[in-house]
Image (cartoon, rainbow, N blue to C red; front, side, top):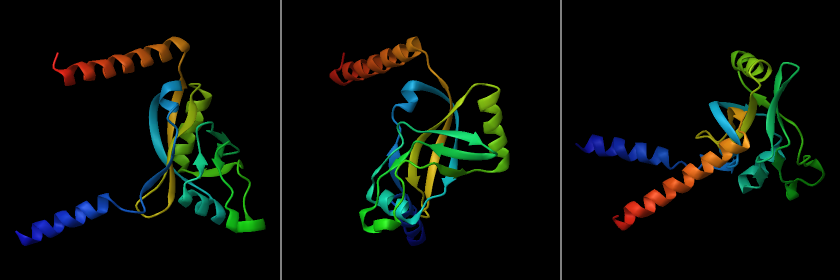
Length: 168
């Protein structure tokens, strides 16, 4: 029995890993786009960018990913300048290369070209090993009526949960 408690303790410690944390989240993505599927990608960063991300100064709300010359790029993402880097800092809105397998890259290329999809960053985070990862969504843009329907459903769900709490 003692062994089981020790094992559960290790599992619990793994869940609350201090290295694994969300850096930036694109909350509007699910409102503006219908997410078909998602995938995890690595991202090539400079040292000053990683230091700035550890402090938590970034924004991926207005950014998107695109396939160019056989490579995947994150465009228009914001990572604040790291003041201690001085002249060795980075450009805050530079294009950053995303790392995916060739198979995934060809799937993304066909989704963009043939199906008219968009690659939207959903979440940027540190994984359990402490490396920066980005979760990308392959999405189709919603029309205004779809956005209204999503908002109406969300409002109804909120109202329904209030009624259930009150006991009606």
